[in-house]
Image (cartoon, rainbow, N blue to C red; front, side, top):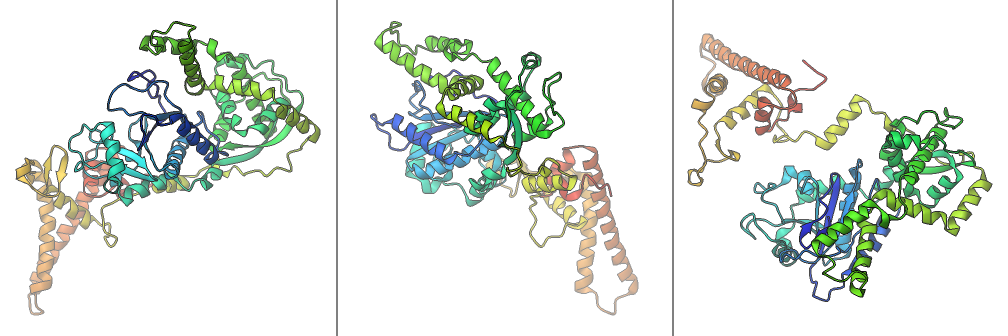
Length: 547
């Protein structure tokens, strides 16, 4: 997110993640440029084989820091991950690793949804944590998630400078619980090994120029796929006269997300490409069209583009050039910094890629690679290919996937049995609790102003049904404790009848609740009520089973 004089020039885009890097001991003469270079070098090493879906993660120095006193100097990054949310979690992994290597940095990470780390750990958060109370309280420091609790700083308003000081000086009191740390680490997965699990290797038949580019920089596969999958009618017209001469076969890798996107995108009509029944040719056609679209619609002079002119207008309006005369030494220095910033952070991704491709084609490495591919004339048989079974998923696999990701999280003990009796028992206990404006409380405390939940007035009809269950249970307990072998058979039969009546009512109540949950769709009063006593909807019914 670009910040100029404290104002946000460009808001955080959808499907984007923002990281702000602060230093614990930064003095007035702190070398932010050196730290930026060190961070980007470390990022490049850690992500050397990664294929970014859209933007590459990199850190930059803002062209001018905010002037507000509570916003310290910092480095920043903003990365659009597009359709592949795995990029966002890979960035969290990188930030955690960077915070281990650079022990004096504290990082604030957010996306367009806000504190997404807390969203992931929602089941394990302290009761005080909510979107309104966690502003400037969530950071990454020395390889851990840190949350500043209210006992260190009361009130919702906590300025950034004070928050960073608390993390640095009282990190033992701010480090998040093991449950929160584990939930986030589990979501990240076992990087860097996981990186290779996300790849799909195959062979493609491409014009030799494009094949040489991909061989030199495999990450170019992402912008080519995105260009093809997002093409419009005008883009398609620009691909009518593509020449497929001097084609070669190469092995390449996609992310599974990119490969699935490309395979489900329909080929262009009326194309001049033979062997369209061959998968490697179909893939090659789509990548070639993506290349043509990318290079056709891009202005190679990024500083003559409309986007750059808009960027400069915003700089002028913000007072960035500080009344320096255009062409002066100070003005030219500021302009140089602005262009460097724009080329890295604000320039459209297509323009960045097109410029990179143009420069790459002028290199000696490109010429050598191109010639080597023409001489080799590969058939594709020597490349190791991955099967495509992962593209197909049956209902059982989907249910298993959903359960592993959003699985049942009940409040039962391990030895509890899921029966009609313990469900209605927990529901009965729930109805006797007290509530305030934030929800049901486990204890009643009139001194805090909690509103007492009156079951006789609020749920009288439900309570009457549950009373019958209690009578059956009491009768059963009395039967075990007080009856002797000489008691009348008639009394035994009466008590047994009461017990069975209670169990039958028990089942009837549960049946009605389940029926209500089925009829209300994804969510509703019954589902919410049962969730409050520890039951998920999937605990009580299955979408494939109406019994």
